[in-house]
Amino acid sequence: MPLPPSLPSNSYENENKLIAWDEKALRSGLLAVRWPARAEVIGHAPTIIVDGAHNADSMQKLLQTLHSSFTYKRLIIVLSTASDKDLIGMVRALADSDIAVLTRMANPRAASIEQLEILFAENAPGVSIYTAEGSAQAMELALDLANDNDLICASGSLYIAAEVLRWSAHRGNKAIASTIESIDH
Image 1 (tube, helix red, strand yellow):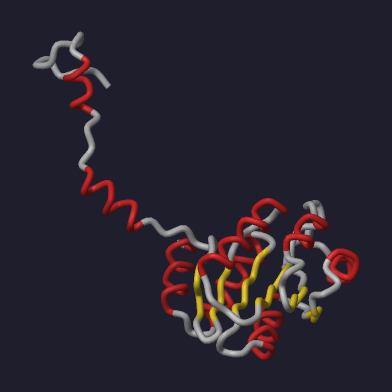
Image 2 (cartoon, helix red, strand yellow):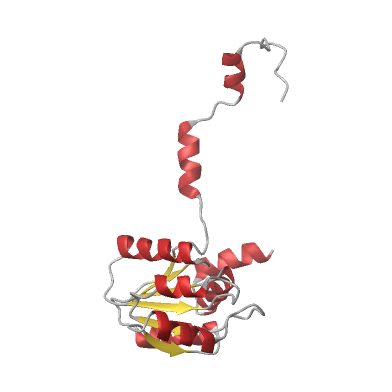
């Protein structure tokens, strides 16, 4: 951006004034930022969270966030992910979960439920496994299994996250429905 004629071009102090920011406006803007599907709470009693973690590292960080930021009795994971991901690493990151509801998202790259079942048996044998044919059915099953003090977390891909957000909107979550509507238009 060229300097206005009233400011000498050799004055870095004047150049800095051109890019000055208002701290109050910056703080306000940062507080207003929403990042859908990143440890996003979409329900209570039980707490329901949706997160787009889609690799071993992001899954580990998600679990750290859940353990440090939420209080719950049991962790119920609803999982679907792409078959070309580090599935073993992701399953190992989930090994401390109490229950996993495995499903297949509506994506041609999705890992099969059977593949996920085998990986859990081999890498997370302490996790109780349930299966459901689609994300909506998986979420309903997770709700049936959960008590009010449990935490349900749907994760494994941004695709499953989007499906679960739509499920939540269809169940009457007006805030999620509004977000989806703004994205779709």
